[in-house]
Image 1 (tube, helix red, strand yellow):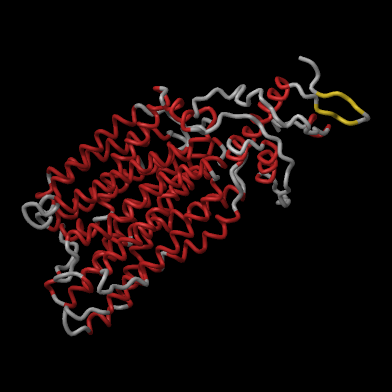
Image 2: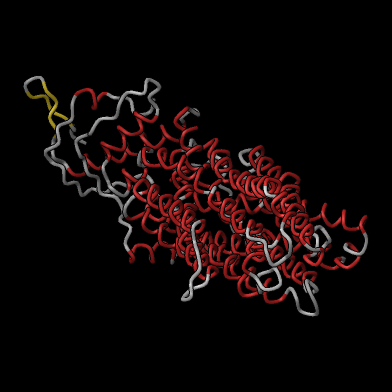
Length: 553
C-alpha cells in the first residue's frame, strides 16, 4: 500500500486515495470505541447514571402512585366510596397504553434525531402531564376521571420514551466490564420510586388523619381530594431536578460516529468524556465517514436474518411475559392486599377510611422493602459476574414455581391469619425474583444486542411488547378478578401468571449472553471494514499529531 501521507513544506498533506482513507478511518473508529469500552469508571459515568436514574425514579413514582391514588379517588368521586371497574381500569391502564406508544415513537426518534435531543423533550412532557393531573377538575362536559385518563396517557407516552433513551444512553457510554451494573443502577431507581410513592402516601394520610376523622359522614370526604392531588403532583419534583442534567448531557459518541457519521466530533467527545481535567469541549472540523445507514430497507434486511430476528423476538417476548405478572401485580397491589385482609372495608365508617389508606400504604412499603428493592440490588451484585441470561432464567424459574404455589394454594393461604403471612412472604419473593431476574435483565439485554443505528428502535419495540403485556394483564385483571364474587378469581389469575413465566423460560434460552462483550461485537455485524471506501472529505488536512497519535492508549 502506498504512503497515506506525503511531506510538503514541512506539513503533512492528506492524499486522496479512497481505500487508504477508509482503512485509516475504520481503524480510527474501532480504536476510539475501544477507549470507551476499556475506560475506568469516572465522575462522568456517575453523572450519566444519576441523570438516567432520577428519570426512572420519576417514572416509577408516577406510574405506581396510582395504586394509592385510585383508592383516594374512589372515596371522593366514586359510587359507594370506590371507583367502578371501568373507572379504575381507565386511570390505571392509561399510563401503560401511553408508554407503549412512547416506547415505539421515542425509540425511533432517538435513532433518527439523536439521543440527547429526545432526552429533555420526553422528561419535559412528563413534568407537564404530571402537574396537569394534580390540578385537573371536572365539569358538565367531562368528568375528572376522563381528564385524568387523558393526562395519564400523555404522561405514559413520555415515560415510555424514557425506557429506550435511558437504556441506550447508559449502555453507549458504559465500559464493557461494568455496563450491566451501570444499567442496573439506572433501572434500580424504579424500586426507590415505588417505595417513595408508598411512603409519600403514608405521610400524606398521617398528615390528614385529624381532618379525615373529623368528617361527619362518608359522603363528606373533601380532604381526600387534596391528598391524591398532593401525592400525584409531587412526582414533578424529581423530574425538574433531573431536567438540567438531561439537557446538558452530551450526545453519545456512538450516535455521533455511526449515525451522524462525524468521526472527528465523536473522537473529541470521547476525549472530553475521559478528560479528568474537565477541559471545555470544542467544536471540531467535520470529517464524514460512510457507514451503513438506518433505512427501512436496511432494517428489514438486518432483521430478516434468522439470528438477528431471533434475538429481537427473544428480547421482546421475554419482556412481554414478564410484564404480564409484573404490572398485573404492581398496579393492583392494593386489591391484592385487601383480598388477603390487609385493608379495612369501607363499611367501617370514616375511621375505616383512614385505616384503609394507611394499611394500603404500609402494605406497599412492606412489599417494596421486602422484595422489590433487594431484588434490584441483588441483580447489581451479580449482573456482571453471572451474566444476564443465568439471572433471567433463574428469575423465570422461581416465578413459575411461586405463582403456581400461590395460585393452587390460594384458598388455604388466605384462610387464616398465620397462613396469610405465608402468602405475603411468597408475594414478596415474587417481587424479589422479578427484579433479581427478568424485570432487570429484560431492560438491559435489548440495550446491548443491536447495531447503533437500530439500538434504540429495537429496545423500544421490546419495551413496547412489555407494555402490551402490562395492558393485557391490567385489562384481564380488572375484567376477571370478580368472577364468582369479589376477588374470587384472583387465584386463577395467579395460575395464568405462572403459565407466562414458564413461556419466559423458553424465550430466554434463545438469547445470547452479553456479559463483558462490546456493543459492536453484540451487533452481529463485521466491524473490520465497517467504514466503507466511499469517502467525501477529500480536502481534509491531517496534522502530524493526528498521524502519530496512538488511538489505542
